[in-house]
Image 1 (cartoon, rainbow, N blue to C red):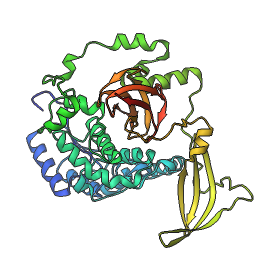
Image 2: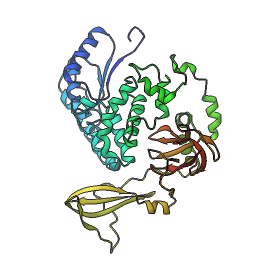
Image 3: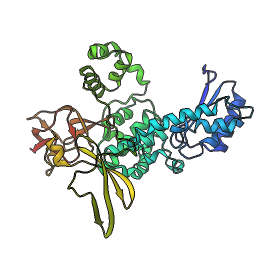
Image 4: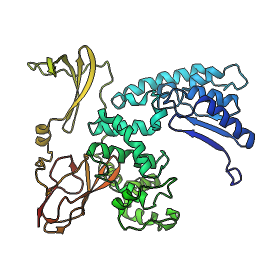
Amino acid sequence: MADMGCDSIAIKDMAGLLTPGATGELVGALKQALDLPLFLHCHGTSGLAPLCQLKAIENGVDHIDTAISAFANGTSHPATETMVAALAGTERDSGLDLQLLNDIARHFREVRKKYHQFESEFTREDVSVQINQVPGGMMSNLANQLKEQGALGRIDEVFAEIPRVREDLGYPPLVTPTSQIVGTQAVMNVLAGSRYKTITNEVKRYLMGHYGKPLGTVNEELRQRAVGSEEVIDVRPADLLPPELDKLRAEIGELAKCEEDLLTYAMFPDLGKSFLEQRAAGTLEPEPLLPPEGIQLKTADGGTPTEFVIDVHGESYQVAITGVGVKGTGKRHFFLTLDGMPEEVVFEPLNEYRAEGGSGRKQATKAGHVTTGMPGNIVEVLVKEGDHIAAGQPVLITEAMKMEAEVQATIDGVVTAIHVAKGDRVTPGEVLIEIEAG
């Protein structure tokens, strides 16, 4: 890399897999071999990151990445204040003012409280990362994805599925964007109840070589199932792309106010355009934030029971509703105590959702009823009523967790009814398209 003209070298341990011994050995060897600035970027998922950084400093590393303590540790970086204090008075003293850093941390601890609804136990230290090797950013992203699907309790199944998907794809590195491709496919495999029942378009593009050549051997049975006889490229993918910037600029027009807006549209054509249209119309609203903990919330209406004894499988639980959060579309956050312990749950009553404009679609009961295995949005309807189609033919494209996937026909036949349009929100089990066998 030095011979190729690199100005610096960075060791990036995004999963928190480094150990102090390995770090010292690696840093020492690199400093002996190279006369370039050496950076260490590591996450504290396994709890070893501060020890790794100290060992790296002992062996001559030039830069370490840290985070202010309000946002540090766990799947983030070691705390800045911790490392400043550890190096104070040594020849590697940072020269930073610990009191000023403490003031900054105090400020951001209050800011963080505003976003407590997005906190997850999966962003804390977890030594099992040494086994599942899931990077910190990917871990918190998976937790958020599963939380949106109401399936956070199945995250351990996803962790078990990730190595299998990664093996099938020829061991792509778990860094953006391939970490998202692997993680989302693993989630779909688990939630659909069948491996590769739904294959994302990004996995298909990956298997066609559009993300470069895999490090390992791809599962050819999966490749055949996903892309069939489509051409698999073996050249640098970017060399095949025609210039697109001027075309995209013309498409998005005045909605793009700057280059960042244009790039947003380029990366997320549907979601990005919707965002820019809402911003232009003045209808863009921020994600509703729940009141910080400790602030008095609206209590349940008078006359409505707020304390219960609930029996489940022979076990009794004392439940008390202590407050009601902000009401979203078809959802309501409730704050409870469960046997004296505070809990937060989200209810999504189906009858209320339909009354507020929900789909009201019937549930699938026949072989010709096309459904999706994942909640998401309709990106494109590929058929029309009266079309003759074959089993396995794509009929819809949906978007879930920032990944697009095809929904396929379940039987040979004729399309008799289409119950969705572009932009519709859909959930598993709903009839999206009806096919009459024939």
